[in-house]
Length: 512
Image (cartoon, rainbow, N blue to C red; front, side, top):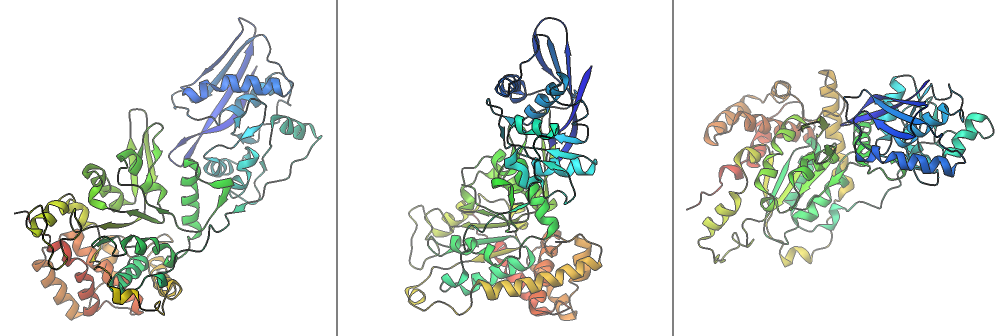
């Protein structure tokens, strides 16, 4: 007789159905797991054996075969422990044969029979609910699974014994309650930054339209402080974005205690990060920083210090909002619709733009050109806003804090995002579409300028040698500026300001 238990295998954030088949037959004593298991799945034999013994059950002295179907799908992770153990318990009569027929099961076993939290519970619960099944998962993952559906049957035991008692009717487990993460503290406020009014304006524009931003300035000018305060003016995640972000965090194992948060992600990897760390990959094709920043901000400080190939790997995610990781036995696609915010010094010494400074490496222009040549033109072409952040003077630092802070800027950003939401919803776009992410054909219609603006953009496109992508990105920024002003049509002054944020890339010095 073959006992079957439903579980899942993960491909990106998609949970594919897997059938755990357990058969106990007379023959030489053996415990075999087949069906393309990885090392963690193969080691489940010892965890299952010890957990069952700790729960008062002994494995029969027979041949035990566990098949994970479909056999051509790679199986990775420790979450197969619990379905294998429950399949064996049904096979030896410790549980009713039909007890697990309506459930999808996943969880890791400790040697004492207790259950340990695993990654991917939220997408597994979503997939189980779509198939009309309930879910059995560890107690630590129960609050996460409860978000899948309010009427879904979720069992979150702490141990094998507790689950067995539930099915026997001697103990009833309550359904876990969806958990909301407590705020980690107040976000840093823009009021803490003195001076840099131009940079604050660019930061507000970037937040209003979800535009990519590059800040160039000497050390100590406040670039990192500005980037750290961007989350304080961004709107909270919408329901659809919250679900996508939480599913990525669940697969990556970064959801703490199964609690979801509506704060947008803010990821700031070190410049020594590898390509696999940034875009994803490695063993199991795990999500990288670009996917963990989905729906939020990816901050790259000291941008030219990143490896050139690593930076160029951002081109496709910046354009499409997804990243495909292709390996010999994996082809996984993760969402990666993030907002890139980068900071850099003008040169390696950082002082080339200071009046009276003479670089020891040669002429200042050559030092600047050699340092900035580490950034490819196609990558810079995908950055909407490129601004200079000057050094802060002592006169700025002794001034009292500014009257406006993050709350006032966040209100203007929320109003601009609301206008975009209504505009693109009428055009049939999904919720959360912004000026930066809407299709090019749609932005041409939404950002059609007046006659004076049309003449300006035509002349500027020729003078600045704008690419087709650059042309559309100017329109996107101009549309955001009009949204911040509450105007229905893009006008000449909006286009003029939008063009000023791209003029820096047109002035990149050439190495002598």
